[in-house]
Image 1 (cartoon, rainbow, N blue to C red):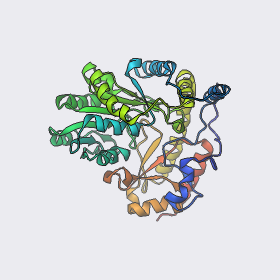
Image 2 (cartoon, rainbow, N blue to C red):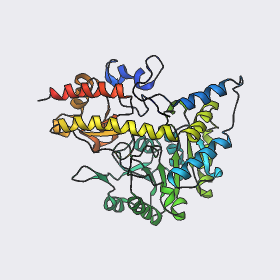
Image 3 (cartoon, one colour):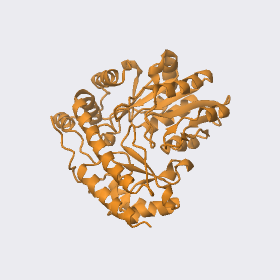
Image 4 (cartoon, one colour):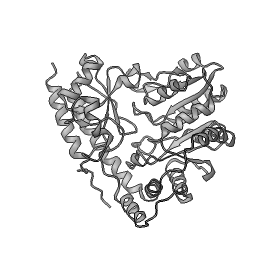
Length: 392
């Protein structure tokens, strides 16, 4: 089947976060919002049909997360990522951020250190601080060609007996890296040696572009699996964020019981009927749609790349290996972070995420979400082209 990604439904008036908050965040409501990580691409039609079918039943009382949903996800993970989980390993969570917060409580105490590899999705370090833990900043190292890698020497120099947890972003938001096996293995060996638990956020794992391949951290060996919690979900891949559903996979019984103590105290419950329906449909029927989506996203990457090549004295980016997020290096423009944000908002008419919000290492950068229809992407690139053309 051929899916259409040229146009998408108008989200104005639907309470969509990225539209409702434009005035509050950017001071104007007429810009194209390309910040929060959901898609301006319609959710797949087969998921819509599954939801319609469930709505035919007129009772929406409490529902347990169905075994069939987990089985569909387990089958997907085995086929696409080569890792086998058991149903007992899987726990419902309404968001990856909620799972991170539960893991912080479960595997560390006040004053303990938690490793965060910046620049990174802001809730990683904000969650640590809110729980009265200490952020052990292990910034990624940016090489001469702009590619980011782990800084293992820095990590080893900072770890001590109070270091309890590493929050791994894989694939990485915002820099777009899909970590290679050998890179992950070096991180794993350090964590094993120092008894550090790893929370691996793999929510973008299905959004990886060939020839890159996502390597689940827990797949690196039985010893690594035994120190790993894996955050998964269909929310990013199939535009289901509004259903507030994800999964935490924990194979080690001891880790799972520690996590569940916090999990049960919070009362995560079992999610929503329609969330279960949508997730099962995504993992059961979504392979072809996802393949076509990634082809479309690569076309959007190409449009952005053309603009950056045209104005390479002002803006550049490394084509992401995964995610639908572009990490734009705007440092050559010579703007402060405030001026840079103002340029995108008031000159280009685009609402992006400021790089500085991902930590100080993000200064001079902007994050652009290119998971939009072809129509929106062409309009956004036209506006960016005209704005950059006016910069002296």
